[in-house]
Image (cartoon, rainbow, N blue to C red; front, side):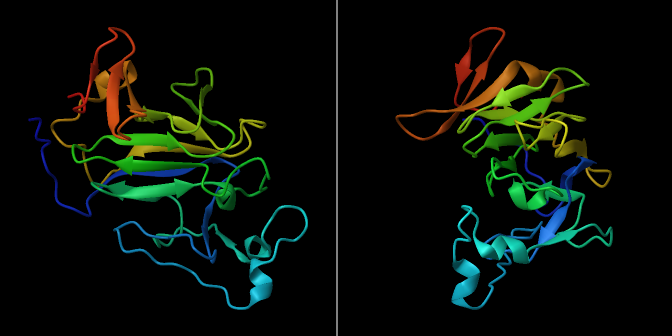
Length: 213
């Protein structure tokens, strides 16, 4: 049984910052703004806030506020995550929101061994690239391990328009069991029969249930 090395909960291992066209946000009903697992949900009063405006967009979207400050609040960039944390990125993060980007376009979670995994949740693909290379399309329910310096684009129709960068957090190092040099070869997939995540090595064809070391 693979037993991942544990790290003190709440230690930030990864941060996600702006490259272009993105910011933190607050004030949207039903969306969390957190870094420590304590969920804060903003509730906007009045039925008018929940009415479709005729363009396929809830009027409560107009009430959300972008956070451009750098005071360290969890609503602001850089977002930080540690063991067991998860962060949703999407339309509300965009300085110029696009209707083709879902409100929950993708999510990033930090596993027990300190790895960061990107999962695409939107109807349109999420994009990822490493080292200034070509954008790779990650479709709904697909997952990828993240490495230092990887960039994430929310908008497949305008790849350079809304981009985050993934970095190791200066306050923490990845746990001993996570070897980032192996990340490029392995991809996380979801088993359709069980709904569980498994891992496949794109170079060797090996598949396994346990996260790679």
